[in-house]
Length: 86
Image (tube, rainbow, N blue to C red):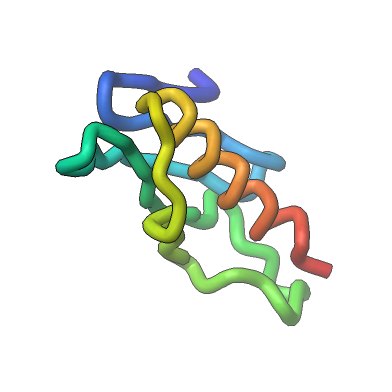
């Protein structure tokens, strides 16, 4: 199963080497943001600038009107962090 989604979280396999898990937080003002982890499914020992085995991320600087928007922002942030590896 490539992903799992509940009301507050989403998990997805990405590029066959990483697992991304995103959690949505509801804030007091009625908006939402996201946080989560990127974990290695398979670690490549030859990649010198790879992420740590578990890497945290957080969208706390940005608030979103819906939980889905926060979830998408969290996934995008995690995927960008992985895609930016050279």
